[in-house]
Image (cartoon, rainbow, N blue to C red; front, side, top):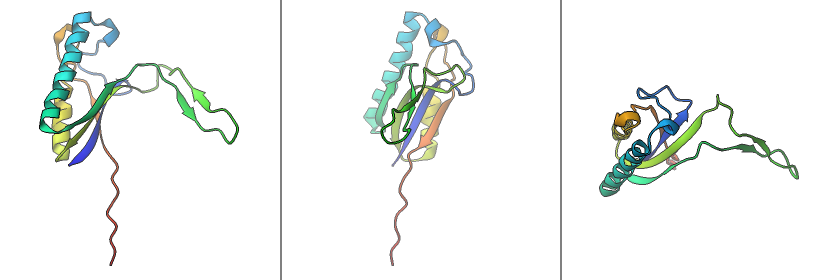
Length: 135
């Protein structure tokens, strides 16, 4: 099994087919979208492929170390051109092809008008340590 991170973007990824921002959806459309995500996660829990997932707020700040005894350097709130992660899901699947299959299915979550978003999801494998060979 290999772990993959599925990233949902507010922006920074190619535009989705049903590209109506969530803050313009009706409460019923938001509820349907969240229900789809929860049902998807529950199904993957049943197959043992779900690890974790969360939705994220659009607010955030970049922080970096600026030297001993100095306050951290911050950049935020984000400018309109910066990538924002809307949420993430970690899956643990047998193959890369299965990770792509599940990301494609997750991309079909409903949005405005109850129609699938067809949003782009970023699929990132977890970095693994290569085995040490000793002779």
